[in-house]
Image 1 (cartoon, rainbow, N blue to C red):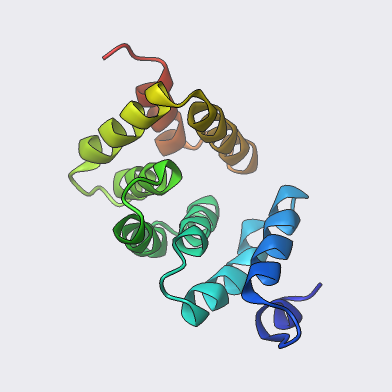
Image 2: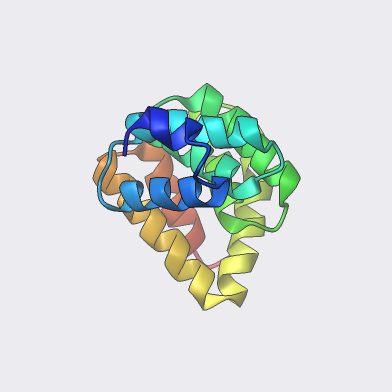
Length: 151
């Protein structure tokens, strides 16, 4: 599937495009190749918090902290309880040297402590991020704050 058909094929629903792009990500497609698809999904439906979360993550993986921050802010505004959105925002804030990281880390900590499945998902995502972007300092810090500390 090409980027052009991902974002513009009228015969595919936005959900199908999202699912196909997510599968491409899972199969190892580079983040930079998927950014246009998720950007198009966000442009098509600005209230799709899952698409904004994915777009923020892809920007982070592609070392584009400023657009990641903007996408993560939008994602958190749309769904304040989404743990991965909070993690993405904290990562982007660290990478852009913004203040206020602690609030988002604390919200994520509370969620992962209460729901083990969320903890597993966040750990998997951070580990995947570290595979795709080795020695990613912000991800290592967030992972440590969320899972290595007793607080």
